[in-house]
Image (cartoon, rainbow, N blue to C red; front, side, top):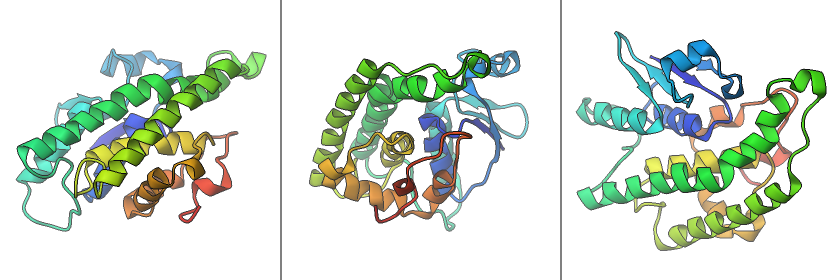
Length: 234
């Protein structure tokens, strides 16, 4: 299996976490989404990551199709050392997981993560940046994005106060999706953790899982994360 990803893409990160939780190790190939290469667009005309190429001719594009595929494959496999189900529980429980995945991969991406990456990463590394130098981020936009992030941290705090994990009593793909987005913004130094202790305690539990360690080792050239990014007791 070959997984095409970008190290700070939240969708890619959620799938990398899912693979690690299931004890699977795909070959990772990094794609820089701002380059919009013709060869990449030929595989996925939507220009979105991640992409999973399976043995044979099957190619899956996007975190939705890949996560559902992995969940079905794991459900059909014999019992082994895999540590979690991506969509656990009853029909109602699984519906709640999917609702929250849609919240984080949809609403949080639209309102915070996508624009934050565009302003702080893609402008810095995009077309012409080497010649003209990195463009300055829009300060007013970043202020609005950080305000939006507080709304989502409040919602995560509410969920964590009501349940053991975000969607219920078991860790699920909803937790992985939310943590993927927050890990990106944590890398960029934009998460006010101390103002949201419930969200922070939940994130510490995710951050301490073995599946999370490869993400904490990621580095973007010229943009190191804050020291607390890798600290499990930050």
